[in-house]
Image (cartoon, rainbow, N blue to C red):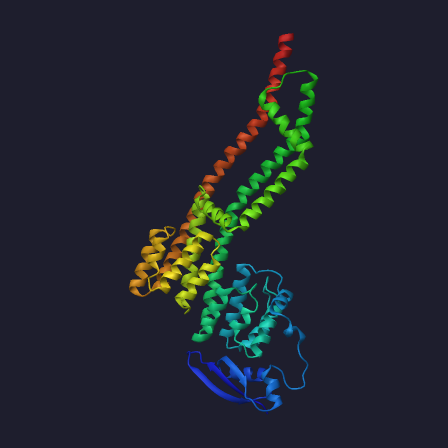
Length: 429
């Protein structure tokens, strides 16, 4: 019978090594997990052909799984069509943590995940993870082969949990991390629903009036040969463009969209757009606070789970959506590599607020940078909620003013010629 040497960790983090007499690698993994260990590496002892075949992840004489021979990118695209939402990733992570915390071996837990309802992450993802783990790979290595589902942040945190023997705790922290960001995204989206709805309704009413009501008024005024005032003439020109030259408007919009897309795809274009978002009135503060909260929460979560500071900064840089902050974090990572603290380059970038710089410096002095960043994240998440409420309180009256001006212009364009017509009739009589 083939022999397999293994290296595993206890829940306390202690490394254990040994040799098992089992027919294949999946059986070896099951045996290791039954011992209450987390497998790190499992290798077949060289010798017989059966051991070589088993080391490859299959007993001698079995058929090869053709799907496992596909390129990782193609195999991933067949199993996962889109990037999961944060809420979906939080649910998946929490379910896996609960199964492992109940004492279930990793391969059994992954098998159970294929039967649990986890919207957004297909059962094939869990099946592929289980297959990779049964072939002797770690969970983090298996997840790294599906980058659409599990990004660098996720993979590195799982790897840190495997190394420390605290995978369940890490998964629970990640689930909480994704849940918090999902709630923030939901609040921002909810805050934008009302303005978008009001704008859509207003535009619909204006178009209805221009297409269906205005032609009747114009026909009536032309019949009385009345000289139309300036607001009415402007409205008639707008109506003519929308009804007869709509194809030209669509062409212009398409050209502008193409130009904007190309501009956005350039390095300078992305930087200018990201800078514009941060400097916009009213909305800019919400964008800045959201970015600071995301950076603080991500870096804190990584450091709390044992990820090295340089790796944590690199991952935080990669997940930031703003180009300016990504460049500032990259310079911070270079400065830390040269032996400087985190607070110094953050202050030199002139992008991060003084509160963040001061608290990070205090965390470095006390040796608790993750705790300082966690406090910062909570501070900015609370400030984000306040900024969202302020933004909504400002946008609502602004929308009312804009709608009032638009409706007033329409009424003025219709009523002025009617008053003039009535005046002419009275004068003639």
